[in-house]
Image (cartoon, rainbow, N blue to C red; front, side, top):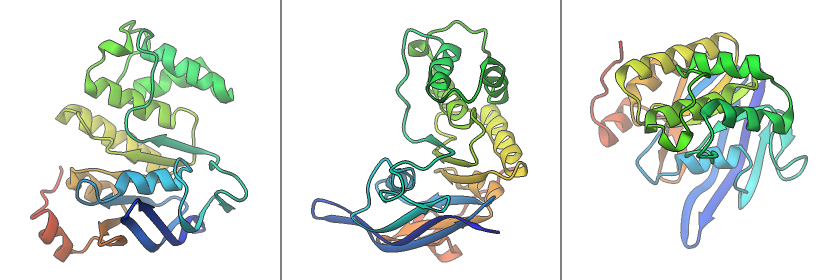
Length: 228
């Protein structure tokens, strides 16, 4: 497998607080990687660094063979769900995805419709996004992250605010993306889903990214229940 994401001696600080201190990370093409950690440990910040939304204070971040901040500020072919995307509240989910798709002009209405169906949304639903439940907004966020067929998918808490049945649907969607050879980066407080999906699990620990060992599991989170 070829390397698709590399972090070399990357540091990130916010004022007097050091969040990452000379971290190194390598992710191979087609790998599904999960990240766990306490609230505020830096999971979302890590994804923002990799997607070019935040600059590193030092070190090198390379995505798809290109150095961020040198060859380009934002990596190509990356779908992102970090926090809640900014939607036009009075428009439907389908209309919002249409507007987003027009920016790059890569996909048309058929791809948007099939992606919405994939995550359990109906393109015919005229409900404005401002009236969406948190779960529906989460589904829409996942849809916008994957609708253009990106090779790298970065999803921060994709299971947030979803019920059990929807969790199952999203898991099946992510399994399908894995089968298609997509590179997936995921975080979730529902670690059982990460264990089910991911090839590798890391923990944000003491300003570093380390393998998620059983010792760290018990130290931070106790026993993890398996997801069926």
